[in-house]
Image (tube, rainbow, N blue to C red; front, side, top):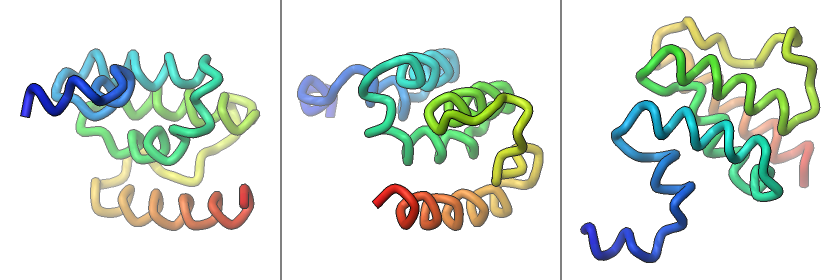
Length: 101
């Protein structure tokens, strides 16, 4: 598996990796990058990260990528249980797909 990862972009590995700190860094890097829009679905999914602070920063990243004010509420309650967040994320991704297509 490690050799297969050599072909993966580093940002993708960080975003989906085991290291909670690197997942947080990845969301912020993508939010500031020209590649961020292409990773928007993955960053929205980061709103269900197991680490609460990562969910907060993923929210900042999503807001930035969507051009929303930081005080504008997200469509995902990052304090809800994981299953609830997952449903909200899936619904929001469907909505975003319709809006952005």
